[in-house]
Length: 126
Image 1 (cartoon, rainbow, N blue to C red):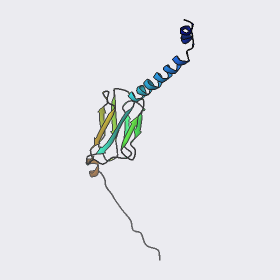
Image 2: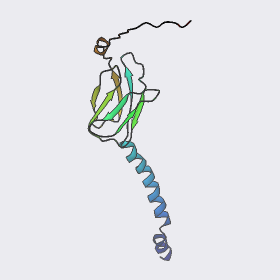
Image 3: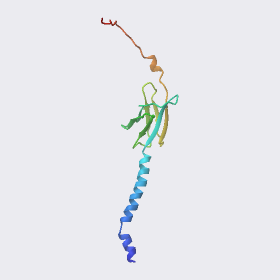
Image 4: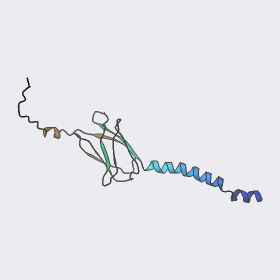
């Protein structure tokens, strides 16, 4: 009977088990708050430096050289907004999803608005 009382009196093993469970479940909880994805164009090429934000928050990031992004501590609901110069901005509902593949379409109307005007003459010095 004395050994049984000492077993419960010494809580070192209980602390070790609690620590192990905390590490396992803590990593799982952290992973649930992470949104990951890749941004590509209509031809399947990755887009480097696309802006990915959660609408209505200050949470956002840019895509890396592989077109991938990661948002930590992201909400389970809301809207992702993805934008890049020369492409149409997209809004995608999160709806509990954690992995995204987002395809941006080129904004061809912007090309009609560009006007280049040049005036003047440059004389080469002799």
